[in-house]
Length: 470
Image (cartoon, rainbow, N blue to C red; front, top):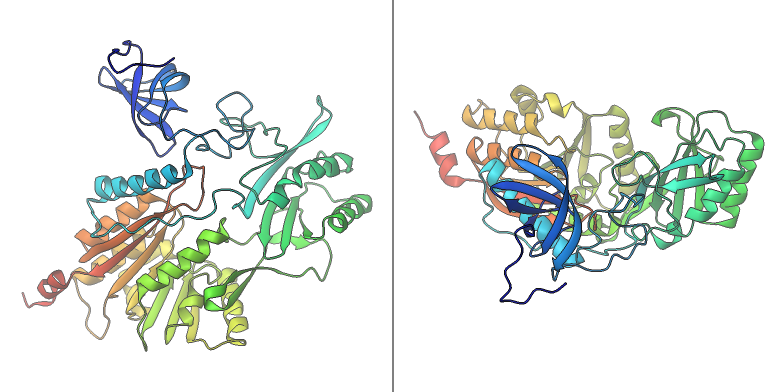
């Protein structure tokens, strides 16, 4: 149905004003906010209410009367609002460039509304390939007795059931092509009822499939896995009988996975269960931009908080005289240290040291003991870096005796705009920094997930006031 300019929309139509972080259209009716699944900004729609509260309603799109210019045809046949649709993506119906703009706006809104912070400069968002980007995924597995077949893939939208996926547009094409062969493989196995999950991890030239199995695999099943790997040469099998610590390769001599940071001449080894970025294309650009913004000067010391396997620490060590990488797990610190030693054997590197520290229990005394650094890189999990930022604010408000100095610049990489905004508010309003720049990263195209980066510089005026005698 089309609407001419002179027509007045019927009263039961809803005008969609914006798009929320959960990819639902936002409309209003009689002062109440309506969140509409599947609706896009600028559209005139009809919707069916599925949940009603005093201040808001949740609804599902039933008809589009005027379509948004942002709307595109989803590439994946499993995407949609219908029952059984795959829940791996929420935004395939939105133009890829528009998704980036929406996420940039979501970052700006979070910084202002939650942290009362406005960046001096909004940098151009980081984006890369919109399809085939997902090098890591957790694929659920279930043998459905009534259907007599195995399902492998993401869960259906708002459901515990597994979507009947036969392909996936966000997985690398060679992995998407494995979905049906994997279903046939698991269906033939003796342990087909005891394999609930396959963890996917792609590296350069290799694809690791980590099979979670609740009972020991028979020799026949192991032979089936080996035959599958022989038929698909990039595949290597890993087995996980219990927790993550039990993960091991099916066969000895399996070569380690690795990803590359070519700008820095680095190859980063990792295991399938290790945390690495889902999108290697964006990760390369992210590391490059973060280090340019960090602007390390000759002879400086840098601290990389939440260093993981050294994704930022090792590139920083190619530029800084000294870098300290801090992470919460001793095992992870050992892995990062080993990656550094391997890199140092092949190229010139600054001095890197590593420490295991519970960064969610950080105090001003511990922070001071870690020593001064001209620059910080912070890359926390979704919970953010609240304790670390609070400790810095405490030291800034009550400067300690001695030679400890606050970092002149902080580059903060975030996977949660809400906790970034909270921490940014503390840095700006309590620790004496200004937010010099920020941008969104489209690490997860077609999802509502927002990754971002922000730069904080010492406010010279605040610094002068804070250091002046009372």
